[in-house]
Length: 234
Length: 234
DNA sequence: TGACGAAATAATGTGCACATTCTGTCTGAA
DNA sequence: TTCAGACAGAATGTGCACATTATTTCGTCA
Image (cartoon, rainbow over all chains, first blue to last red; front, side, top):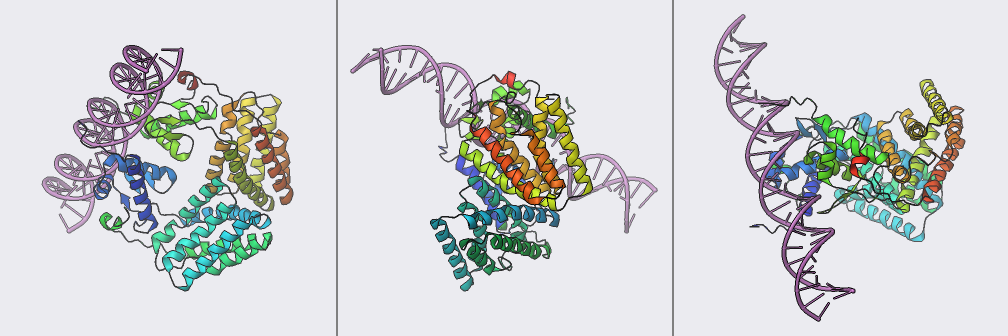
């Protein structure tokens, strides 16, 4: 006697996963917050098993940390870990801009120019949220232009992890990138084929980001789960 | 009335995960193989839920692919995916050897020399299995010597994925690396501080590996699970 | 009054049973 | 002979109930 037709089963998993992920990205969940399964299940209106699955996935992907028989927590990235991630990014992104400088297609150049224009426009009208998102996507775009899906996926993970405690600390107040014009300079070096210059600019750009985040003290501001997950289910 | 003291609960998860992982790494599971949960639970002597958890983790980490309501399968890497992974490795490992060439400690040099000696010894006595393992660990060692844990973890993932269908196809017959002496040459360039030479050697080394794997036809040889998981539980 | 300890409570971990879905097979008709 | 449809069997997906473990609270004793 099947009472519930239940057509969307795989979408439910993704919804829970995405909700937690979005709440973290929006800075709603402070580092150190304990994510208890019954509370999450009640707030998200799903069963505890579904929450457990999503939490396990997030733990395996590195977004959350799990302590056996204790629970899962929002990790607080140490300065050292953050610097390591930026170090890996330096290696990859320097190679990326080098490659793009030496060899890129016409459509790639067009996409790059369009993105820079969008960033400038967002900065002009003081749209902090959009500018923040665009500044992150700039780095992803460069990976995409290499035409390597594995590279793009990898870099996307690194970028979100590195900007995590960034947005966790103070998403609204902070400026998006150390220098918004940095992206424009890098793009110009790429488009004019100056590989060494592009790589150097990217390295200094990333160093600037590290310093910006290192000086930021990790504020702790615990919030209730009901408030944290308001409007992230859509 | 607790019948089982059960001191190792978290170790059980890791055991199942490691067993599947090891079976794959040993080439016991051909690409396309369906890993059914009841059979795995019977063979590994654990409950189905534990198998499910391990399978989910492996899927999220990219080792296995899952088809909803169908099961989980051993993926068959396409040539394109493999080339992309090697491309990312090229970026990272070129940067790694460059950095090590320019700056490495005395203990690092000692570890590097020791590893090369081990590899040569294994090749001398024709120990294929050990030589294969060591040749992989060489690349991991280089990452470790950079002192960046994130980098090491990332590269370990890439390396296992790239060597996956390598070992899946024919683990015993094949030679470990394109040129076993390549590693020695790279190490020498690093130790003598020749960054450009080390990077170039690493790039050609990786290109050689790609070509070696590209020419390999994906043989399909389905085996019974009981045989696949013989001796991987230790 | 403070500290130590035990019981109560709540959360995590695990196994089981049931529902759903897919696959392979068998039968019957064109 | 072949194709279509239905049925049987098995595997996956899901929710629930219970066991285990940690935390908090309360009581007692020094």
